[in-house]
Image 1 (tube, rainbow, N blue to C red):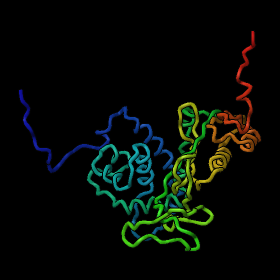
Image 2: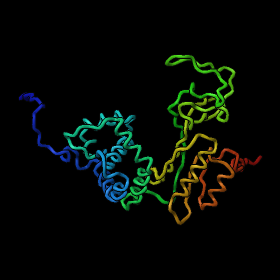
Image 3: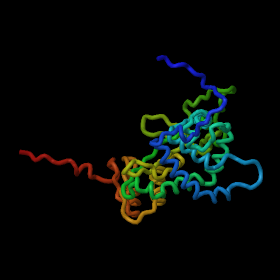
Length: 301
């Protein structure tokens, strides 16, 4: 028998968001852990906000929405607000009522940035990783570290000489700029729109670009990130950030650290051993000469 199409624009709908989320959905377990940490941080939130003025977006909503943005790789705050507006799963996780209006992306970004500047997000993640239920998922002995380049929100045309001696771009919205035979370096040039960005190239034969460097420390049991940081793009940033993240790990016994050959530097390996860390680093020939000794000689007959 053919079903009858019924219009879905009824005026009243008696359905709770809780009923629309499957009981076995993985976000349910994450939501319970997140709520436990947010309850612990309630006093910290109370000290951050004034008792006068208009109510802002609740910090609990800001942090839950930021987690969703990371989980589902939502590329912008505007798209995140759009997703929360019509996605019932997102509304349930953030804690927004089904009939509540969504925030403007600019308002959300400004409120979230205040939390980031107050290091609330870092404390939130550290408390989350410190929960007993989460600790059982992570290895406390074996780790891996790596870094990646993060493009700055700046055009190469903004990379100008600090003393103003170079030729400015042509007028217009996207004026041309001639870089021919011009020597540029981070010592003599800087971006006019993002002064913290540095000119960096990943390897020989690749073009240099304005960027930062992101670093992540992973545990090897389930591949969970236990620490992350952002630094200026320099040739030593990866090793310096690794030591900083290792120093933040509470530990009492020797651990191991895996890394690629970019970390194969004598001083860095010495710093790891001084910190009671066994390095498992790919050899590139600058530290260890084991590469030659590993080649087994074939005896002549």
